[in-house]
Amino acid sequence: MKSINLSWVSQTSLTNLNSGEGGSNYIDVKKYKWQGEEYPYVSGQAMRFYLKEAIRRQEDYKLSCIPNDKGESCGDVENCQLCDLFGFMTTKKKEGRSKGNAMIRVSPVKVSPAIGLLPFDENSNVDFLTRKKRDTLNTTELGGDIVNVEMGMNIYKCGIAIDVVRIGREEVIAEGERRTLKLTDLINEEERKNRIINVMNAVLNIADYSKQARLLTDFTPDFLICSAQNVYNHKLQKAIEMNDIALNIQRFKEVIKEVIDEGGTVYVGMRAGLFENEEEIIDACRGLGIEVKQPNEVIKEISKKVTEDVIS
Ligand SMILES: [Zn+2]
Image 1 (tube, helix red, strand yellow):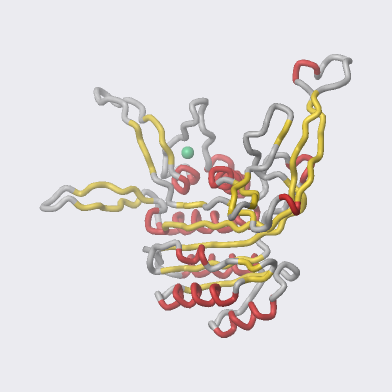
Image 2 (cartoon, helix red, strand yellow; image 1 turned 45 degrees about the horizontal axis):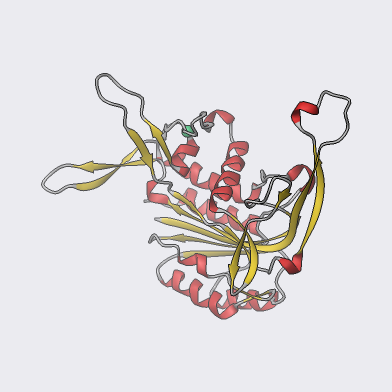
């Protein structure tokens, strides 16, 4: 197994998962434009943060570092699962006479932005909240700013690709007759598998978004497809496309078939009540030899495959 892809769709209630630039008293929603219409989105950076927090919560806190005041993480791939999974850019401590170097690890876990699929204007509202200034908290003075918060309901598509080969490993250049890349194991295979499974479980537990004290959003998958692949690519991310509230079946079948033809195993999970063409989806999956289950069951199954298979 060389890579794992997850792609999912989640329907939210009224929320503001990622604020845009806004003004001092206006908290807007980040938006992109497509054919002249505005749609909300959550940046890839915000999604990575939410996933990291979910992983931190799932495990002993000691296994994940917190960046310092310069935003630098510990860089200890062996002992810190977040630095292993999500990479880092940090300054190496000076050792002996050598100069301090910048140390960079490219993230083996790639995260897409969460893209809203329904136009924002038709599904949004502006609410207000009062924000007390910190320096007035202990006074008897009432008041504070009125802040307007833009909120919307939407259906978002998100994705993750895991570069299995690089989890728990470091790329080093092997000097010889030819310069080549060599991967050095920093942890054992069992721990590598644990970390991969942690990432997938985090998708089921993703929660620490901004403004949750009064918005309580659930952003977990209503429709989820996962692939365990013997090649590394992001192809599965193109399988989900919607026509209104229905899944584009033709495209879904084409992409899944291609992943299967490459030797991949694909799992599909669906909660009832999102897509208008649920029966068609179940039929299409049956035709591809896939039994549709619940999203959490799908994560369980692919985790089992990771545990039992040899990973590259
Ligand atoms: Zn770390």
